[in-house]
Each structure stands twice: as C-alpha cells, then as structure tokens.
Length: 457
Image (tube, rainbow, N blue to C red; front, side):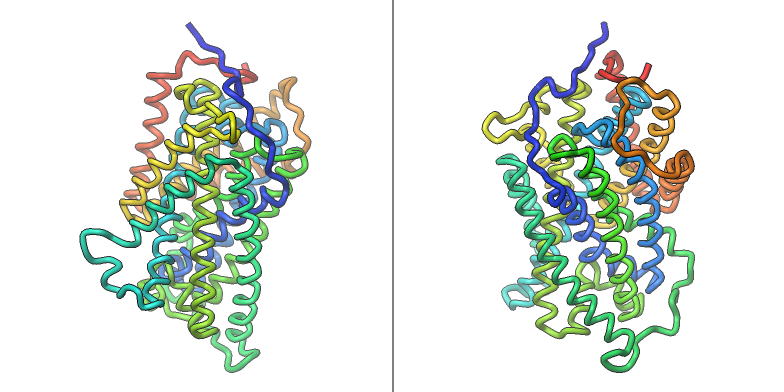
C-alpha cells in the first residue's frame, strides 16, 4: 500500500530571512572555509596556482547555481536540492540525495567546527594561556573539545528561532567583509611592491599543474553555501526575487575573495612552508604583512568565520532533514515544528548530535571531501532534474527565474560536478559511496512505497 506525502503537513516554518540574511547564510558559510581554513592546505599542494583551483570551483558552482535558482523559485520548499530532484527524477534519487545532503551538511559542519577549534586554540596559544604542545597532546584534544562544545551551542541557538541565526550571520559577515577588505588591500599592495619590494614568486605553480584539479576537489567544500540557501527556501521572504539574487551573488562575491586570498597566501610562502601551517595558515600570512595586530584581528575573524560557517550548515542540515520527514521518507518526528519558536527542534537535535560525533574524528581533509562528494552528487542530479522538468513542463512548474544558457549550462554543470569527484582521495570516495549506498538501502527498506506530491509521472 502506497503512502502519499504532503510536504509541510507537520507544520509550517516562519518566513523570517530576507535578502541580506540569505546572502549572509551563503557568504558566511563560504568565507569561513575558503579563506580561513583552506589557504594552508590548498597552497601547500599547489602554491599560488591554488587560486586556479578556487576559480574552477567558482565556475562549477555558478553552472549549478543558475539551474538551482530556477528550480528554487518554482519550488521554494525546505530541503533544497532534495526537493527538486525528488520531484523531477523520482523517490529513489530523491532519497539518495536527501540523505546524502543531510549527512553532507553534517560533515561540512564538523569540518568548520574543527577549524573553529583550531582558531580558538591558536588564540589561547597567542595569549600565552596554553602552550603549543598542550593543544594536541594528552587525553583530551583541546581543538576537538572546543569544536564539540561549539557545535552543541550552535544547534541549541538554532532551536530558539531562525531570526537568531540570521542576526548572527548578518553581524558576523559584515564584520568579516570589512576585515578582509583591509587585509587583502594591504597585503596585496605589499605583494605587488607598491609599498616596498615586489614579493611575486618566480614560479606560479612550483609543484606543477597536476595538483590543481585534486586541490579543486578538496576545496569545493568552500562553495557549498549557495546550495544551503536553497535548503532554507521555506524560511525566505519573497523567494522569487531573493533566491536567485542571493545564490548567484554569494558565489561571485566569495569566488573573487578566494582567488585574491590564495594568490597572496601562495605567493607569500613556499608550499613546503605553508602546508604544515594547516588550518590557521592565513594567520601567519597576516603576521607577515601586518605584524602582531594583524594576527589578533585575523584570529578573531577566523573564529567568527568558522562559527558562521558551522552555524549556517547546522541550520541547513536540519532543514534538509525536515524536508525528508515532511515527505515521510524518514520518521515524521523530524518534521515537528516547535510551536513557540517555529523551528524543527527534533531535526536540529539530531543534526547537532551527529555533527559533534564527526568533529571528534578530527580528520579535516576527509570531512571536507566527503561533504564535497555528497554535494557534488546532488549538484549533478539538480542539473539533470532541470533538464527533465523543462522537457516535460508539468502544470505546477512556473519558475519566476529561468536559467540562461539552457540546456548547455545545466548539462556542463552536471558533467563537471560528477567529474570533480574523480580527483578526491580514495578514503573520501569510499565514504561517499558508502553514504550513497545507505541512501539506496534506506529507500528499499523504508520509503519504496511512498508517492510524492507533485512528482512527475
């Protein structure tokens, strides 16, 4: 006997997020990873050429953001990519993507929280409160402990209303953009020799051009923010206008910031030097150009940026789970909305719990790549879904925004998304396949008889 789901039957979310809030959910997530966590890891692999890796990521993100914007204006529902794919391609692809998206966002949240712990610990080291050795040696890892505690606090904050998340995002992102404008201007002028001797290195790609694509696969986590906007579509005011503007605008803004940042970081230190600096390498870049005052400012900015990224990712993961539950693909408890605060409290609690468990692994690069893997599967299928829906034109499909360049843009975006997976490290690929298989298994055991409302016949 089949069960027909009705999205939103468990409760409706309050529309409290405006254009600024939507942009800062996307931008805040992406700034945290791309600028404050990845420069050391990326430039350590490819040197200044890591800027090309970020450029490749930006192009793929834009090729997916345009089809996603069209689908989001036609279907402004919580769940984002899951909702689009399930309606366009069917329940099985929807279940695979919905479960993959939820876990992908939790892996991303854990990645950001480990970065948060690194910055918080570095602040304690710079202040002389703890020594460098005490951060990573002993029965308790201070970095991971901070990440776990922060994850629990952020999940709790989101339970008490999305306006809390939006207010935090707006304040943090505004502050970060101001800091980055000053930092990148001063360091860029120094690098070009405007304020002294030029520091441009003789080799743009000291490690060769081979690492560029593998680095692009690693850092693609930096571009997950625009898709997170779609997962909170049901919370956004005037979605017809604000969804496409916030998705495309956030990718363009942070893409430029990433490229400039990696050019500066990769040109300041050799790969063999900046690589071991790890997640806080940008702090040493700031020390090189701005001295100790720059270190203090960047440490504070990095802490806020990773908080912002984790905050937005936890919110988005809960909305992906809410979308699945609203369609009865997971237990209905996940779609229960708190009557006082208008938030899916059960979904947020589950997301917070799994996220802090992932933080405890401390595997930064694996967390980032698995998050990218699961999102790239979704991005590729979003592009396929747009092509299928456009060809069939169901009566309910009436987007306020149409993706330019159809069908070339979604076709190239889909192929590029799937292809980038091939450049990840084997462990990340294996874990990505495992979570994809779990989505198939869950569908076969729990959701195979469910018929979705508005699904293409």
